[in-house]
Amino acid sequence: MTRSKLTRRQVDAILRLRETTDLTAQQIGARFGVGRKVVLRVCKENGVSRGWNRWTEDEDEFLRLNYERHGPTALMRFFPRHPNAGSISARARKLGLRASDPNRFGVHADRLRVVEGGAE
Image 1 (cartoon, rainbow, N blue to C red):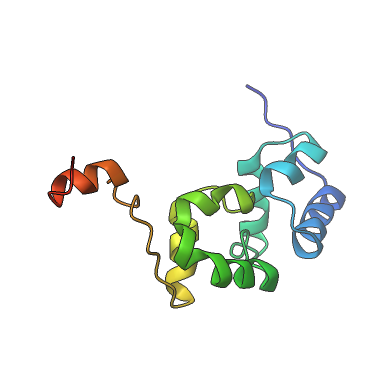
Image 2 (image 1 turned 30 degrees about the horizontal axis):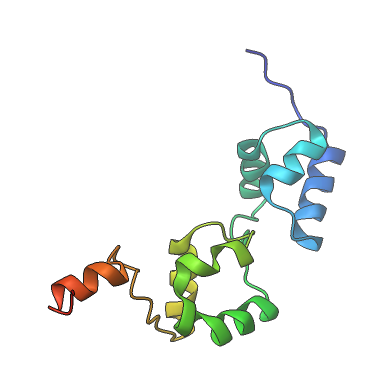
């Protein structure tokens, strides 16, 4: 397995893309023919190791308006940069939001009726 070195110019371009765009490490790596881990390593070596999935004001506002009613699982498709329910839940907690999603623990509505004695 050979390991190709990035030129200083490529490193600078990666850092510039990281700072000026919302591209993921994988997307940036694809532009330079390297993997996601290489991009993350380059950024870490140059003091840029945090903030890859920074939440925008628009995303925060959408979360405030919809989280309580729909919960993290239902909102996953609206946040492609934050692809799992855990990251959505963490951001909601940071914003002081709570979900009223009855399925968040895997309990479906029909099971709730049985547990509560309301099954017919």
